[in-house]
Each structure stands twice: as structure tokens, then as C-alpha cells.
Length: 557
Figure (cartoon, rainbow, N blue to C red):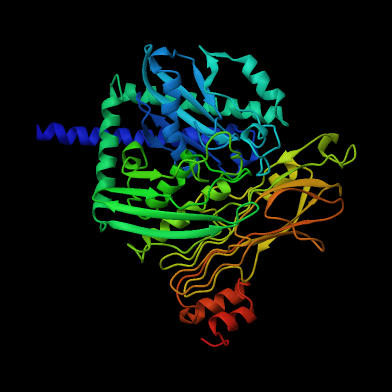
């Protein structure tokens, strides 16, 4: 019996490794075939394999927590609408409903059942961001979700292998770039199909008819490991608060994190009420980033699946900005949702003070650049409209034992889109893109730097910019005596300041300038190693004036 148990453990580990390889190849398939630049170049996606009960077994490393963790709960919504017994080989389901999937209309989730000899054995799901879904366009200006674009309820994209042409025609008719939207839906479908093919090969290699038993062991082991990690923490309730810019007024985020034996509860009672603009967050997205914040320092070596996620409960009062009700506008839900790990980490610092980084820029700076009705014929690519969604990042907070990372997306993990790609896919020129000296918060460990980017229309025409930026009025705070990072800024070069959120016109012949925020520092700046200060000076990361003022550096080690 003991020998059999050991053999089962080995087979489970081999199956687990194989599943990880399959879902990673699933994610890479999306990146190789996606039409949207933000997916292909920045990795704004998720991919995973699910058991027949809708529980997530494994997720790809490539992808974002907001997509992955929200998708983990969304597959159950698909099965509630279309039970597995009603599905057939060749069926593919999709939705972009913010409350049933990943929080806003720009994310499409595709779910595909896998059949072995006409018997369902698993499901594959994938999500990617589509730059435009119609309406006002990707941005925070709408007052209701109805203004934000096309909303597709859970339904069939393919039925028995046949495309739902009517649905595809509706999608194409409602977006500004129909080729990209259609191509991305095919990309998601292809990734799931690839995952299904590889899973069936794995089952043949392992000579098994079902993965249910393997899945149950994987999920149970993950849950047990996560609960063990939580059980090592002292019971109690730990509170932390943070203010962020919001749209027209600041948003207050209040959090109480309760450790009770082998579970963690996260409650956002006391957080601001809903906004009349598109920065509201559906609970699925709140759950995704709050649970990720916990997992950053508690059980971060435990696989992220239904088991480990089960040990963390996230709640927010119904109707508050972190549990927005229909039909609230939610397009820019990431601007607030990506701030949540910083709040969670502020709670956890009280338990694990040497394991928690300082606050960072957190929210990605992802302007939507699009053609203006003020532009003349021929000013835009091919004389037509354009829309592009480049990704820029600020600095992360200083980390335990290390400086913060410069121009790095945390917590989303998406990459900056390359300048060359941005310029070839839209009529824009990026004249400048470099580190912003002195933007990292001073400390014994310095915060990561932001960057400055200068963008102009290639033909000097006016263009629109939809902004979803934060940390302009409320910069990232340092920890344990460290200084705040520099606040972000957006303006017209030699011209006026622009708001951090909302759509505005960049006039003809002018240049848009973005200065992304820096991360907070950690520890007393005077305690920083003089050699590290000198290295920062030599690299142009810190100016001589800042070295003297913040670090007391006089030029000698």
C-alpha cells in the first residue's frame, strides 16, 4: 500500500509538470497568433486548464493576475449557463461580460470543453485584452457600462465546429478595428484547441481515461499547503488604508485582513462608494488582485489553482467602488484594482515586516491613442482611423534587501510594448523614452524609477489620448522611513497640464509627455550605502542635488 501511495505521488507530480507545460504552451500560442499589440507584445492575457466541475487546476505563468484569478471563478459561470452535459465536441463558448468574467468589456474569455471519445474530460479557458470594443473606447469617461462598448453574454462562438457567423458579424460591426477583434477571437480559440490536443496526448501517455483523480489530488495538495502557510501566521485582524487619485475626486481604500487559523479573510468595508465614471471594479477583479496581494508573501511557492485560492476569502460591501453593481461603468477598473496589492501588503507588513516591499506605481500607464475627428484626410495611417494601446510602466517599491525595479509592471506583470512596434502599428513617433532621474523614492533601499515618454503624431496631426493614470496626486509611499516616489505627470510639451484620467485632444504639431511615477523607498536614506549612491549618480538615476539632499552624499565613500 505504501508503495502504491508513493507511485501515485510520482505520477501526480509528472502529470502536474505536464499540465504546466501544456498551459504555458497555450499562453504562448495566444502571443504568437494574437492581433492586438497589447497581447502579442505585452502579454496581457491568461490561460488555464480546468476540471469538469469548473475548478482551475493549473494556470500559465505568462499572463496577469487580474485575468488569471478572475478567470478562475468565471468558468463556473459558463457552466451554470451551459452545463457540460449540454456541450458537444467542437463547441466553443465566449463572453466579455464584466461581472461574469474579468471585469471589463475589453477582455474576452473563451472556454472550450475537451472530449475523449465523446466524453468530456476537461475545459481550457483563455482571456486576452482587445484594444477596442466600440462605445466611447477604452477609458474612464463613460457613466454606464452601456456606453463602454459591445457586451456579449455567455454563448457559442463555435457550435459543433461551425462558427457563429452572426455573432462575429455583430462584433465586427461594433468595433473600430474589426480585423483585430476577429483575429483575437480566433487566437483564443486556437490556444484552447492546442491545449486540448496536448491534454489528450498526455492522457494517452499516462494511459488514463480521466484527469479528475489527478486534478483532485493537485487541488487538495495545493489547498493543504496554502492552509499550512496561513496557519503559521498569528491570528488577528490587521488594517491598512490608502488614498488614490480616482477620477474627479480621491478614492479611499480601507482594508481589514483577518487571519483565522488556516484561512485569510480580506474585507474592504469602509472603502469609498461607487464613482459615476468608469473606474468602478466588479467583485471578480477585486477578488483577483486582493488574493494575489496575499499570495505575494504568503504561500507564494504554492501552485495557484482552485485549492490555494480557496483559503483566501475576499469581500467588499455591495455597491462600493470595489463591488460595483450593474450597470456601473467599469472600463478602467484596472486603475483602482491594481492598487489593491499595495493595500494588502500594508496589512501583511504588520505580520511579516521583513517580507513586504514599499508601495509602487502599481497601476500601469496604458494610454489609448486614437485618431481625431479634427485630423484631415490622409493624416492617419492609410487615410483612415487608428487606435493603439501602448503599455508604459512606473517603478516598483523598494524590496526587502533590494532596490525597487525601474519601469516594471507590478502587480500586473505586463511588459512595456516596444517603441518600434508602437510606431509601425500606428502613425505615432516616440521622440523620447528614458529613465526619469530622482523619481525613485529615497531610502536605504531606493524605489524603482519611472520614465519620461514623448509622443507625437507622425504627420503632425491632432490625435486623442484616453488616460487611465494614477499616482499623480497620491504618489507611492515609502516604508520604515523611506521617502515617497515621485508623482506621475501628463502634459503637452511647452503647454498645458492634462488630467490623469479621461479623453483629451493632443493639438496638431504638439507633443504629449508622460512622466510615470516612481516607487517608494525603504529605510532611512542616510543609511544607504555610499557606493550605491555613487553608482546611481554615475548611471544618471540620481542627480547630484538629490544625492546630497536626500542621502547626505558628499562624493566620498
